[in-house]
Image (cartoon, rainbow, N blue to C red):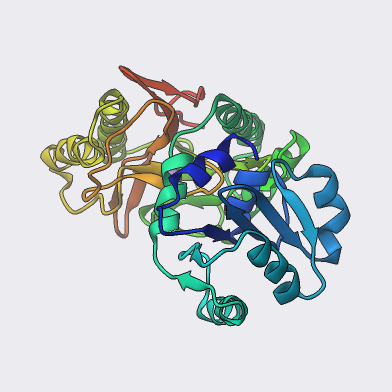
Length: 358
Ligand SMILES: [Mn+2]
């Protein structure tokens, strides 16, 4: 087994013999192998990756730390492992099993007299590992971020009156792939004008016009790792109100980054940012969390939310992304990703955040 699998095996509760992991992200996290289907069965002695014919050859060559078992009939191949290791109880990855998956798996396990445990306990153990990143993981996130910034920088040259949100979003996605991305981290958000008051608006065919804010909430995917960044630009000119809102978000975002450090409580970071925005006169205009973890998933632990008691530790990667949204008028959000260190954080974004009027 490799380090992460060994660690997880050592964390299994005493009365549990094995863990069954089926989510694509977690199979990838533990074995480095990418597939759209597979079963990672972890015992204290050995880890097995069961895959079907489509992945048998590639898994045999590339999966790390586990024995690859190509299966024809899942119940028989899983049964052999259960018998070999005398498995009596298996913890399921609660968040990944649908009701149908669980019923099928329970059927197989019960054939062999194995108790299946449905809970979020295994998910919590895995989160404990994934919540802090290794330097290899951080390097991939940084690479994804650099690609995002390079693509945005080049795409900004095309932003002018009359260009549509969809055209810009398409160009960005193309450039990300040109610069080495494996894909986008999520459907890119490029929205302009009144639509910027919708935090997760989708690009449309409306044309950009002078006086618009244009919000880019974008990220590239690199070797499974995501990046996440938001910048808000203006075209032509801005009103005093736009300027005031931008300046408030800009300062709130800086306050948020200053609050991110090892030992800080997530909800306290959120409160610091939220209080600043509310006291500046924008209570009710910031309805989402201050930030979230980023890694193999675009939104993962920890959450910089009003309810999270999680304590930040070195190696966590979080976004800081306050915004102010005024329905019918406009919105502004600024977002960076940062790696938590013992006494602060290292910002992974290098693009400027001062208001830029294109
Ligand atoms: Mn984000």
